[in-house]
Structure formats: C-alpha cells, structure tokens
Amino acid sequence: MQFIEISEINSTNVYSSELLKNHAVKDDTIVYTFNQTEGKGLGNNKWLSEPFQNILMSIITFPEIQVTDYFKLNLIVSLAVIDYLKLLGIKAKIKWPNDIYVNDKKLCGILIENNISGNLISSSIVGIGLNVNQIFFDKSIPNPVSLKLIRGIDYNIKEHIKILGELVLQKIKQNINIDFEILKNEYLKVLYLYDEYTEFQDINQKFTAKIIDIENSGHLVIEKYNGEVSKFFFKELKFL
Ligand code: BTN
Image 1: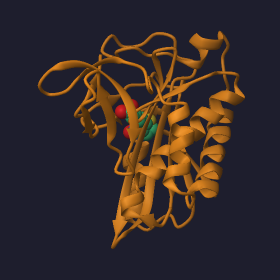
Image 2: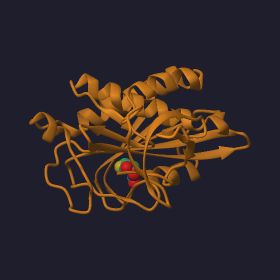
Image 3: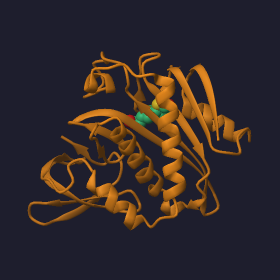
Image 4: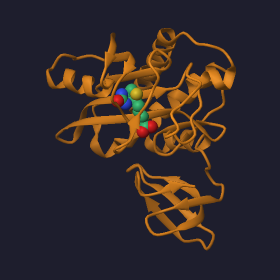
C-alpha cells in the first residue's frame, strides 16, 4: 500500500483513473490532495471543498469481484466510514446511495468508479470527500456539515486521511468475499430512514413510502402506504 500526496489537482478520482490507464499502479494506493479544483460528485454533481480544510482522497484498489457484485464495494466503504466516525464518537447514517449523514446533514460523499475486465471488476477508484474543518459552505450545497461543526474542534487532515484510508482498505480486504446478504444486514441497521415513512419524489410525483430493502444491483426497494412495492436506481428518486 502506498500514499500519493498531490498538493493541488482537478480531481483525485480523475488523477487515479489516469494512473490506472498508464499502468502506473499495481497495488492499493491512496491518492490525496489538499486542494481539489474540479471535484466530482455522483452524476453531474460537483464536489466543492475549501482548500486545506477537508479529506479529499481516492483509494485505488483491485477487488476482483464479479461485475454483478459491484454494489458490495459501496456497502463496505460506507460501513467503513461509519466505523471511522464511531471511533471519533460520532453516530452517523448511510444515506442511499452514497452519502454519509449526521443528524439529517451531509458530512461525506462517496464516488466509486469501477473498471471492468470480462466479468470482473479489475480495479476500483473509491473517492471520498469528508468535510473536516470547514465551517462555511457555498449556498449551492443543500445541507452540509463538518466534523468541526459537530464536535467543535479542529482535526489534523493528513493524519485523518491516513486513519480513514487504512480503515477503508482493511474493511474491503476483510469483507469483499462475504455474502451480500450478510453485508446488507449490517448496512440496513445504519441506513438513513430505513423502515420509516418519509416523503419521496420520483420523476412523476411526490409520495410517502418507507425503505424496505436494498438489492445487490444497488436498487432501493420502497413500499408505499397501500403496500405497493417499487424499486429505484441512483438518481431516479429524491428524498424530500
Ligand atoms: C457525492 O456526494 O456525490 C460524491 C462526492 C465524492 C467527492 C470525492 S472528493 C475526492 C474524490 N475526487 C473527486 O473528484 N470526487 C471524490
């Protein structure tokens, strides 16, 4: 395992993907920066982060799992971030599909990009943006929070990149061959708004429903008051 520090970069995920394209990494690698100028979020979203205040890193790893199991990595990484926050005394939840929430506010976003070779995921880039010492946020960010806003203290960014990065890699190693169903049980226990009626919006309408399951494809399964069950993929559903 190695760490690569870059003081400023467009995106640690983009940089990691170039490293992989150039066959410049063969082993688990953690790329991190202090200033990310074009941070990527899920879909077309941007990830905005004040320089030198937050964790901005991409973990390059080689999971060698079946393509159909790709969502396992999402479960494991999300659970690793929950474990890390527990170490800091913070109780957090996973907001499907890729956010970590503390008391209805977003602390961390995860962006996993996979490379496929045949039926296998040959390499994955696990991008993690976690708000640490930043206390003022751009108005365009819906409901952000940081470790400092939660705990009232400053953290050493570099030290925490190491702690979180190592913890995520260790959790991947220990869990990647575990059954989806077993990981899912752990995931559902800390899933934001699991089994609680709440307001959602799909492309057609607003409705009240509760989350009842997650499929290995990454689909969220919800049930409406009238018992009707439907499945949604990333970006097909909004929490209101
Ligand atoms: C999201 O919430 O939509 C995911 C955000 C992921 C942000 C991280 S910051 C480090 C890495 N590099 C990027 O460009 N994005 C991820």
